Image (cartoon, rainbow, N blue to C red):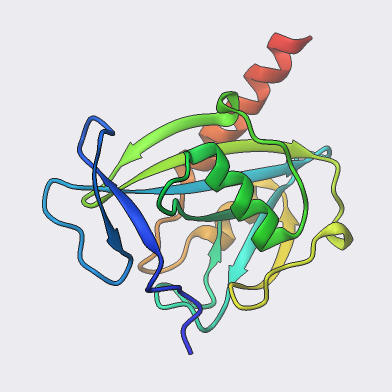
Amino acid sequence: MAADRLTEYWDVYNQRLQRVGQQQRQDPVRPGCFHLVVDAFIFNTAGEVLLQQRSPNKLNFPSCWDCSVGGSVVAGETITAAMHREITEELGVDIPVSPADNFLLQPHTHWIEAWFAFQTDHALTDFTIQREELQRVAYFDRTTAHDHLNQVGFNAYTTELSRAWDHLDQRQRAEA
């Protein structure tokens, strides 16, 4: 059984991020329309990044290594609310989410990805992973993370991972 919830509803947007309708996940997105997706890289205080290994039951890229957390924005949610929900659902922890954590809106053919970056002091033992979505999570150094994310047919998120590191670095310097 697939881990994906095909009957959930998404809001549908135009290129200017104006809501133009709603549809079920299982239905194809109309040309010129987009649904929203949230993704994040979460770093520990040692500078390692958390990656998740997707469930073998996922429709797309089963068992592949992926960013720390991510998923679709469901109908009625903001990207920050969706990011918080995904972190809580997939990792079982409460990491506060603010608009300042969002560092990139990236359009694709029929979805727009909102990328977030976080730093946490959570150890691996603090995470309670959502087994229907994930097999496991682990922290990796930058080189090993890039190696794990570089899989045939799957976006390696090389640019997004580098931008996430830079975003956190800039925020830390601004707060110092």
